[in-house]
Image 1 (cartoon, rainbow, N blue to C red):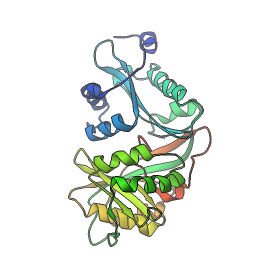
Image 2 (image 1 turned 30 degrees about the vertical axis):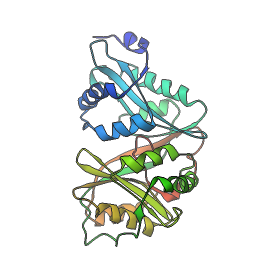
Image 3 (image 1 turned 180 degrees about the vertical axis):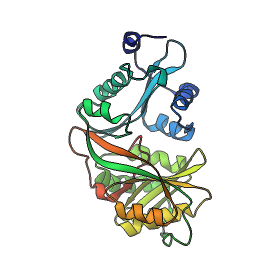
Length: 282
């Protein structure tokens, strides 16, 4: 077995889709589902990094997603259970924080990871609660009169999104046009937009960005009724009314994480951001 000093001396390298089997094996060690579709999205829009295990496979991974002009998200920080509490998580975090430069950095922390992030200068600013289940037709709102997004809509959506999210997510939004199972926009994009994409048998609804709670609920209902099976919503703690609506519609709390930030406050008009694309990339 590698010693602690050996692990922290090992280089951090960029990961590619060729590393996906090793990534899935590592995350399974921590009890995570494969999440293959999400990883394919992150390979397209983010920067995955990892440390190879001298015994084979990967000892740890982390993902950095950069948004112009000065914001970044960190997610999917995983260390193999056999290497826990040996400094590898700190090494991976230090690596991506250096790459982020002076940008404000956000992440969502589990209870296990939060102490490390606090020691590295992150502070708690919000919560993110995951709700899953089948949205009951009788309990949900009427679907919003939204249309499918095309590549011609990306510029307008990106402009509206930059004001809400506080940074340029145009590359992610453009990727969603082909990656998402459904991507819809209300009016001229200022009213709202939301996407739905599949992951391990569940339809993740995100992002959800809207001018009002009514618009957010209508978009979610529209996407939920556009397919079958369970849905997942990662709802910001600043939107308790949407959370209560989700529960009344049949969704149940799956877990809660803490939204943390390093540097300046989260940018943008976050009151309009009801759900992220994913908690890993913002």
